[in-house]
Image (cartoon, rainbow, N blue to C red; front, side, top):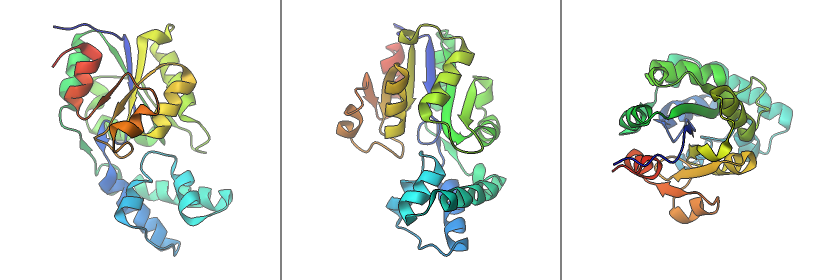
Amino acid sequence: MSSRRFDYVVFDLDGTLLDTRAGIIAAAIYIMDKYKMPIPTRDVLEGIIGPPIQESFCKLFDLSDEKAIEMANAFRDVYISEEYLLNAVPYEGIFDLFDSLKKSGVTIGIATYKREDLAKQLLCKKGFDKYTEYIFGSDFEGKLKKSDIILTCLDNMGCKDYSKAVYIGDGKSDGTGAITVGIVFLAVTYGFGFKTIEEAQKFDPIGVADSCTGIREIILGQN
């Protein structure tokens, strides 16, 4: 039985659609080594996934904005190679979820902090272009906020009534972005950001899912 609540469902990418940690961490370690930076622990490295990479470098190494941007650009120059970019795995059940959303008439979009050209290349290689043409990401300068990217996605999807839209993501920037835009947020705990339901609930989500099946139950009322 389906009881659709939303006409527009927008997803984050890293930690929501794809487990991208292997490629991102490997590329980050390469750049840290190149710049003679100390390599953090695995837990700390996983914390760089999601936010803009220059923000992560700035926070980790107490860098100036200029130096952080330089490192971020070097990271992206390395990460664009398929060795790193395509080292990502779709989460279990994500394509079943997309199939269910499409069959229910939902318009799907993707709004990510990953640079837009890289996001499109990765998502097309992994087969997500079968489900949506609405893929939007960060600019080359990394100046866009998550709310800016979500708004661009909604506008291009033709969403006029934000009460009919939901944003799904695994971290603080996702929750903040949804709140800033004024749309409903659905949190997931299987990614890199939220580790507990309590962390996610700080962003007033309509629900917290620990799997793609859980997302479908909340969005479509299907189990």
